[in-house]
Amino acid sequence: MNGEADSSRLTQLEERRLIERAQRGCETSAHRLIAAHQDRLHAFVWRMVRRDPDAEEICQDAFLRAFQALDKFDFAYRFSTWLFTIGYRLCLNTMRRRKDYSGETDFSALPGDGRGEPEPDISEQFANSDEAIRLKKVIWDSVENLTPPQRAAVLLFYRESLSCHEIGDILEMPAATVKSHLHRARTRLKGMLEKQLVEDWSAVRFGEASA
Image 1: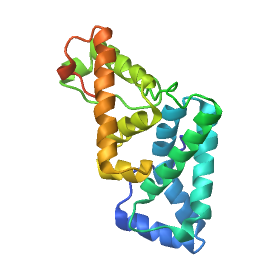
Image 2: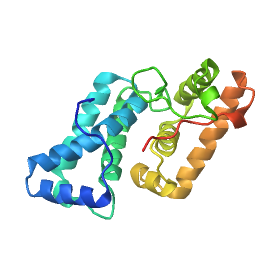
Image 3: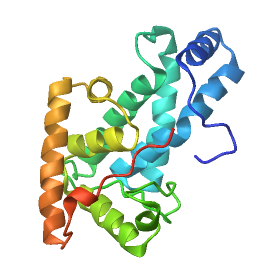
Image 4: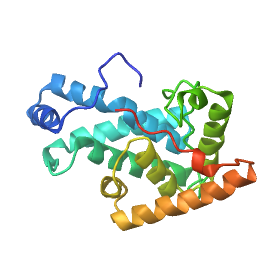
C-alpha cells in the first residue's frame, strides 16, 4: 500500500470538502481520501494481524465498505475514525477465523524493519544507540501478548497520538474503558519487560506517531 500518493494528514475542512465531492461522484477526491489514509490504515491493520495478505485484503475491504456507505457518513467524526473502526472490526473477524483473538499477534513496527520511521527517544545519543533499538524491539515484541483491544488501544494512543475519546470512537467503547485497557496494557508490559532485564522502565517510552 506504499504508493507515491501524498499521505499527509488532511485538515478537517479539506477532508470535508473531499468527502462531499466524493459523495457526488468525484473520483479524484475519492483517490485523494484513499491516498491520505492508506499508509496509516495499512500500518494499523498489519500490526494487528501481522500477515501481509490479510492486511492487504482488510485494507481493500475497509475502503470498499467506507465508500459504499459514504452517503451515510457522519461529519461529526473524522474520516479516519470511521475508516479505522471498519478496519478494526475486520481485523477482529480475521483474527477470530484464525483463532488467535486471545492475543497471538503483534504490531512490531521497529526501526529498520521497513514499516516505520525511526522515532525520537530520551536523547539523540540514546535514540541512535544499539541499546535503544534493542529496548524498542523488546517493547513492541512484547505487545503480542496483549489482548486485541489492548494492542489496538496502545497502537492508536502511542503511534497515532489519538485521545482516549477518539480511540473509544474507533473501538466502540467508552473512554474510561480505553483508559482501563491502556492501564492494564502498561502493567502487563512492565511485568514482561522486567522479566527481560529492562532495568529502568521509567527511561523507556513507546514511539509516538509522527505528524
